[in-house]
Structure formats: structure tokens, C-alpha cells
Image 1 (cartoon, rainbow, N blue to C red):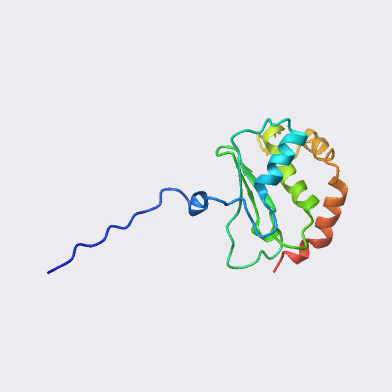
Image 2: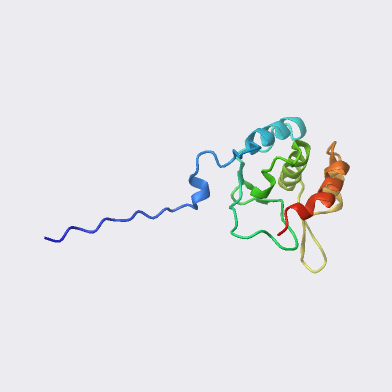
Amino acid sequence: MDRPKRKVSHLSLPLQRQLPFAHEGRYFDLLEIFNKLNDRYFKRALRGYRIVWGRRRKSRPKSYLVFASIQEEDRIIRVHPLLDAPFVPLWFMEYVVYHEMLHAVVPDEYDANGRRRVHTERFLEAEQKFPHYRKARKWEAENLGRFLG
């Protein structure tokens, strides 16, 4: 007698969205950082956002690394999982998250050719108001090689 085949359920959302604690890393809790920054610098204006660790890749990036990104349509901030490391200072993680949060509040601009500019003068001025901005940029330059393969 033939047994009926089992039905396989297909997940409709990416696996990342189905993990209940995608914001908790081994060393950093992204939601805790997001909430702290939202309270301190944005007067809790960023509502309905999710912050998660990105997917781990099979190989390390070779020449550059995008530390984080924001997807405005879905209100999601993704942070590269290589940053969840014991040598990464908390103030650097806060800078990375702050930078992405700024994208939600500082509007993009378009040049004469219609190209979108996200790191505008207004954005850069706001970014430099972060207390550890200079220290974070210096740390990034000095430590980028630790993340590249």
C-alpha cells in the first residue's frame, strides 16, 4: 500500500524574519542599542522599525564591508554579523546603528542628473553630532582589515 506523500510547507517570509530574537547576538543586542539611541537622539520618533543581524555568508568579504543598511520600505535595519565580535567596542556599534537611523530622518536628495544622494551635507552634519563620531571613524579605518578575508 502506498503511503501519501507528506506535504512540505514553504515559508513565505525569509528565514531571518521568522527567528524570534534576530536582534540578539552573542555580544550585542541590537534592539537594546536601537531603543537607547531612539530615546536619546531621536525623541522616540523611529516607530515600527526592526533591527536584525544580517545573514552569515560562506566567505568573508574581500575588499570592502557594508557594516549595516536600512530598508525604508520595510522599516528594517540590518547589521553585518561580523560586527558581533568581542573586539568591537559598544560605542562603535552605537555609531553604526545611529548612522542607519539617521537615514530614516534625513531626506535623500537628487542631483541634476536625477541620481539619489543619501550622504548629503545635512546628513553628514547630523552624523558628526554623534559623540563618538571621530573616534568611531578612526576605529573603523584602523580595524577594517580585521573583517576582510
